[in-house]
Amino acid sequence: MHEEMPYHTIPDPPDTITGLTVLIRLIDGLGFRFRWATEGLRGEDCRFKPDPRCMSIKELIEHIWGLVNWIRLSITGIKQSRPEEVHFVRKSILDMIVELRRIFLSMSEDDLNEIRIHDHSFWHIINGPLSDALTHVGQINILRRLSGNPTPDVNVFTGKPNF
Figure 1 (cartoon, rainbow, N blue to C red):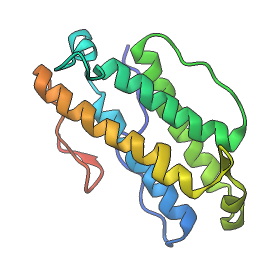
Figure 2 (tube, one colour):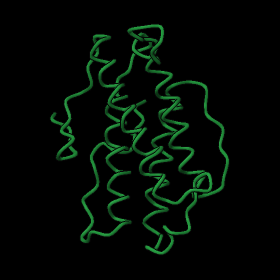
Figure 3 (cartoon, rainbow, N blue to C red):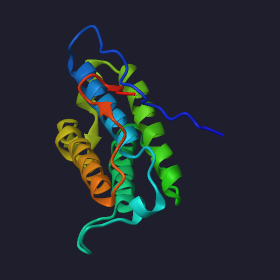
């Protein structure tokens, strides 16, 4: 049975440029990049680390879960437990990203001023966990190449697979 994951493509861009629509587009970019960086992972990929001091792909995915959950928790106040199996961690991350997109779509520009993350303003979400998650997705892509299972051919500029 094939389970469809979100972010096969990036949704169409908004018609206007505002703080919220830029944030939503960043969230969409993370969802698309993460989905494809983790598509078709094998067990040996998840365990792969080029050096004992590096995180494995599984550890990076778990760390991304923590970052995305931190954003979600800052906005919803609802705690969530991380699944154990990497497949379910991946699905949970994508589900949280879809949820964040939905929440941000329902917000006003003024609502962004109310968001706090560890007693810091909304801006810290962008330069903190959101940027960190994007960085770690890039690391997953590199580690996959090193483990011999490169990511599927997608175009991050257009937000579409090349197949």
